[in-house]
Amino acid sequence: MNVGDRVRLLTGTEEGIVTRLLDSELVEVAIDNDFTIPVLRREVVVVAQEEGNNFNRTAPDYRVGQVPGKNANASKKDNSKRPSQNAGPPKPVQPSLQQALAAVASNGAGVAKISGPAATSKQPAAAKGVFLALVHQSPELLGVTLINNTEADVLFTYGEETSARPYRALAADKLGPKASTKPLSFLHMKDFEAWPAVVFQLLPTRLNGEAAYELLTKRQAFKASTFYSSQRPAPVIGKDAYLFQLDEKAAAAITPEQLAQEAPAPAAAPAPAKPAGIDIAALKAQLSGDAPAKPAAVVAAATPAPVFPVVAPAHEFDLHLEALRPDNKEEELSNTAILRLQLDAFEDALSRALATNMHEIVFIHGMGNGVLRKEIHRQLSRNKDIKFFEDARKEKFGFGATLVRLK
Image 1 (spheres, rainbow, N blue to C red):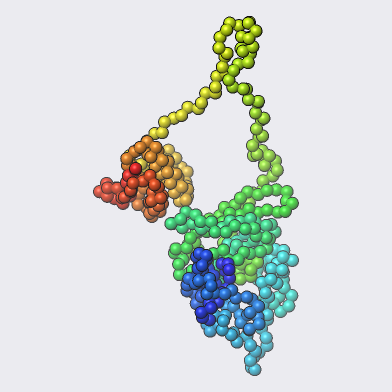
Image 2: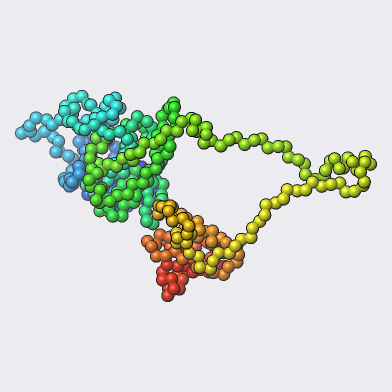
C-alpha cells in the first residue's frame, strides 16, 4: 500500500485516497467528501482498476469548483453514463491517460494528437520544461506532482520546509521524458495558510550525452495573491492544475574540459618513509673506529602540531546573527542557513562550556517564531551532561534566553 492508492474501508462503503503512511499499522485516508481519518491498514483494501470496469463503477474525477454529488464514493453504482431512452447522440469518448502519454511521446513537443472523436478538442501547445503541478484529487484535496515535459531524464529529490522543521526529505527518483510522477504529497485547501514550502533538486541527464549538467535547486512557497492565477492546463497529464515552472533558468552544461579543470590534481606518490630511530651512518662510523665512541645519533621525531587550549565561551552567549557575524552585513542568508549557523554556534559553545567545566551558561536566542528556542531545548533535553535548563531571568531577557546548568 502506497501514498496515492485508492482504498475502501472494510467496515463501510466509503472509499478514499491514502494521503500519508502514519506508521507500520496506521494510514491516513482522505474520503471523497474531503475529510481525512486515520485507519488501521488491516481495515482497508486497495481498489483495483478492473473492479470499476467489471461492476460499472467509476472513480470520481472532480474538476475545479465541483462539489461531490451522489457518485462521490465510487462504491456506489454510477448510472450517470448509462444511455436513456431519450438520450441524444453519444458524447465523444475522452482518451485514457495511457493514450495521451503515448500520443505526446510520438509527437514530441506540443499537444497530443489522438485519432478518433477525441481529436476534435484543441489545446494550446505544451511548454517545454519541468513543472510543479498541484492537481485536484477532489475539490479540497490537491496532489503535489512533478511533470517532465522535456526530452531528457530528470533525477530529482523532493522535500518540504516548515517553520517547525527546516527541511524534511520525502522522495527521490528518476523521471523519464514526457512523464509525470504519482502525487508526492497531498495538500488541503483549507490549510492553505499553513502549507509548507516545497524544495526540488533537479539534475537533467541524457544517456550517451556529451555534457554533464549543473544541479538546479528550486524552493517554491505559495502566496494567495499569485496561487489562484497560476491555474492552467498542465502538459503531459492533460488536466487543469496550479502550475509552476521549476527550470525557468535552464541547467548549464558542463563540458568535459571544465570537468578536467575542476577535478583536483592527482596527489604525488609519497616518498618512502625514512626509518625513525637509529642513524645508520653514525652507527657504522662508531663500529669502524672512525668516530669517537658515543651513543648512536637518533633521528629527531616529527614535531607534533601545537595543541591550542580550549577557550571557555562567554557566560552569556548571544546567538543573534549580528553577534555571530558582525562584519558580514552584505551577504543575504535564507532562514534555513541562518538557523543552521545559529545551531552550529550553540553546539560549539555548549561543548566548550562542558570541556572547561563551566557550571552554567546562558544562551540568548531571542523570541522570533520560537524555532531556534525549540531546537535548543530539544537538544538540551537529550544531553546527559545537562543538570537542568530553564528560561533565564525574565526581568533581564524576557523569554528570549535559556539558562543551562551543567553537571
